[in-house]
Amino acid sequence: MEQFKDLVTITPWHMVMMLGNLLILTLIVKKLLFERVQKVLDERQARADAMLDDARRAKETAEAEKAEYESHLATAKQEVADMLAQADKTAAARSEETLAAARAQAAQMKQKAEAEIEQARKKALNDAKDEIGGMAMAIASKVVEREISEADHKALIDSFIENVGDAS
Picture 1 (spheres, rainbow, N blue to C red):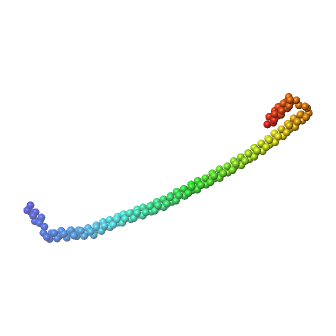
Picture 2 (picture 1 turned 135 degrees about the vertical axis):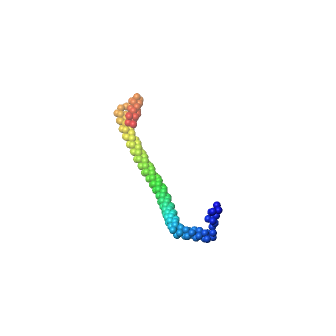
Picture 3 (picture 1 turned 90 degrees about the horizontal axis):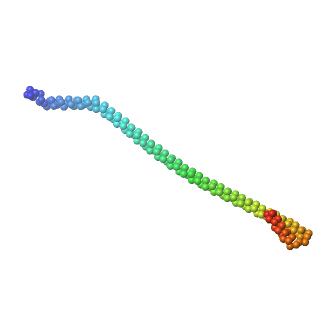
């Protein structure tokens, strides 16, 4: 090992030389590589920032469009609710109108039927009076033509009652 003893000894001059070499190598690396690497890293950072900005803008645009969509949706829902309420009101009004018209028509038909019934009753009464009058005249003429016995009188009354029953 002794033979290598001189080789292992580092003198201050060697130290200066090694530091100088290290400094030169560092400057060369800095000049040739560091600026290029820094430039690539800066470009990547700029692209990443641009992508983040684009994403942020897209998110803001999407949120704005979502808010506008929700606003339109709420407006449409309100319009539908208003239309349904109006349709209900219209249907109720038409229903009431139809019911009122049906009631009026039914009342009119009832009045007409009552008038017809009253007219038929009066006609029946008049016909009965005419028939009774005719029968009374026939009985009176038969009574005048002959003298009536008790049996004939009873027969005439029964005949009269029978004719009145036939007439009704």
